[in-house]
Structure formats: structure tokens, C-alpha cells
Image 1 (cartoon, rainbow, N blue to C red):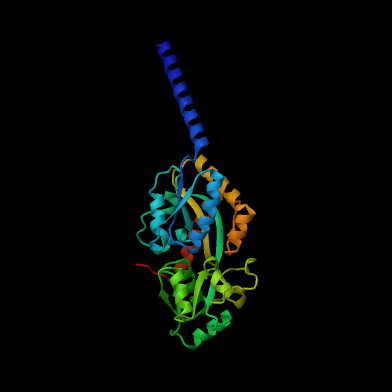
Image 2 (tube, one colour):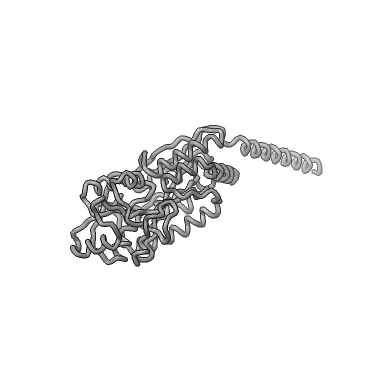
Length: 326
């Protein structure tokens, strides 16, 4: 009996040793094939551009290709659900936006739960929302409010999708400013900006990273930032708060996710690599030109905490703005 127990102990120790060696080898070898980074929006948008800048340098850092896969639809929910259902092996990641935090408050039947089905790796950057008009439109928030109040219910604003961050913050602004303007929804930021440039609307809210090229070219005019403080990246653009309307603070942020239950060593390795890439001055310069405030010190824990706080914040904004989706 004693001999049997000794043999069993030896077998268990051997098995444990083999498993430990395999685990150590897996950690050392990851990644040993290309990684897919899902961007839940169409190509050429601000999230896609950011993801491609990051993926190119991240691939070099990890020694493997990062393949960007655009999976647009349902305000980012199609791509998010795809990653949530993917294997937890570190080879399918999500380049998420603030839409992840908004979705639970505006969509009744989501087929994923971000806090349960996704694991945050790093909060990589953010970009504030701008209030945009045409070159001939209002020059200030006060002028915009006065123009709408002079003819209630006449003016419209372009919305880049029902339930999008910019749609919600626009409705929130309208109520805080006590103005009556109606939304005309478009399928994305690009068409919404085109509608504004065609003089079909008085204004729109759009992220700075998406609109900055049109502002610099003079095709659109940025009259305010939807932030509490001025951005050092756009120091000459005043905030909405400077006009006396407090609390209209929104934009978008970007966070890299993996499916839940992805091994900790993979999450940690990706986090370190991402922060190293974002610390690169060349990468930082490219992103700053897109009015993206980068975060090169995020941890998985701090990213998870930020997601939870943002989900609560957007729930309050959605409730106040009364934005509804089907």
C-alpha cells in the first residue's frame, strides 16, 4: 500500500511538472501565430485609423502580424459580440470604444455582456467631442442657441447613428440648453458630416479625431468642445461649459479587450506591449495629430474600473437625454 501511494505521488509530481513546463513554454511562445484585432466599425473611421496605427507597431513588438478585421454593425455591437464568443486564447482581440459602455442602456437585447464576456487589457486613448457647424453657421455656442430658440423645431442636427455617443450628448446638450432641434440620423460619422457640409443641418456633435481634418481644411468649423476643460490638443476651441452650460462632457475612448477567461499571462503580456508602443514618440505624434489623448500607463485593473464607471455615467446621460432605440 505504501509503495502504491509513493508511486501515485511520483506520477502526480511528474504530471504537475509536465503541466508546469507546458505552461511555461506556452507563456514563452505566445504569440506564435497572427493575432486578429476586430474593429467594430467600417474602414477609414477614427477607430479604424487608431487601430491600424497601434496594430502595426504592436505586431513589431510581439513579433507577429496583427490583422485588423472590420466588423461593422449595430453601433459596434456586432464586432463586440463576435469577440465575446471567440476562444479565450489571445488570438482574437477587440478594439472597443465608448459604445461598449453605452450599449447596455440603449439596446434591450444585447447578445453579450461586456463586463462578463470581455476582459479589458488596456485603455489606450480618448478623443473629445466637438460641436461642428458649417463655415457660414454660428460662430459660438451662444449664437447657436439663440438661432435655434428664435425658431423652435425648425432646425435639425446630424446624428451619426441612433444611440451613438455623439447622438446622446447632442440630445443631452439640447435639453440642458433648453432648445428644440431634431435629430436626423445617418449610418456613421462620415455621412453625418457630409450632410452638415451640404447645409442640410445646423450643427452636429462629432469626435475630434473623426472631424479634425475637415476643421483644418476649413470645410467645417469647431465652435466648442464637449468637455469640462479645454484640450491642450485644441487650445483655441472653447468648451461648452464656458458658455454657462455645465456637464456636457463626452467623446469617445478606445480600449483593447480579450474574451473573458483569457489567461492572465496573455493579458499582462499584451498590456505591457501596448503601453510600450504608446510610449513611442513617433506613435504618440501620429495619434496627437488625430487629437487623440493617449494613455501609455493603463493596467487591466484600471481599464476594468474605467469601463464600469463609464457604463454608469452613460446610463445617467441616456436616461436624461431620453434617447430610444428599437
